[in-house]
Length: 189
Ligand SMILES: [Zn+2]
Image (cartoon, rainbow, N blue to C red; front, side, top):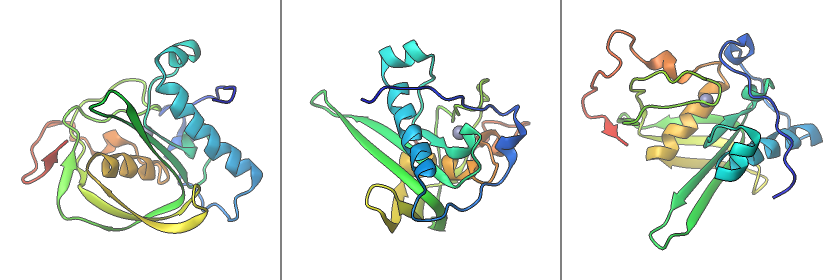
């Protein structure tokens, strides 16, 4: 892993987090590429017990550029899947200008609720999102525009991150008066 120079993650007290991000021009500028690579690196470090403690990072699986105070449409996702044989499979996405182009009618939600690196106080409640989505984005890894089909947990994380590009935070969806209200037919994850 390259040397890590932590950057500040802004929190929901910062009005920047409520603004809309702008499209990123392609090919990526050096600066935008560095931002996106930093985002992936931050997630990687945050998921390492020792390093996250060393740098005081909360573990996270997704990060959007606005969380670094950069209002550009870029998101990074890094999901560790623990396998039966004891190894961990990592699935990463680095998406530029992601846009949800279709979605299921069916909804899904995380039983344990969502969290966010920009929200220091955990706000509890169910966040109902689409169970499946198709996202059109420029893929940093393959250097081409692609359509990604996300389902289940990945769909939830992708929607959470794409929301950041519109200035939306997960707790905006939580019904204050009934945070654990049930939605018929929604899948618990
Ligand atoms: Zn977030």
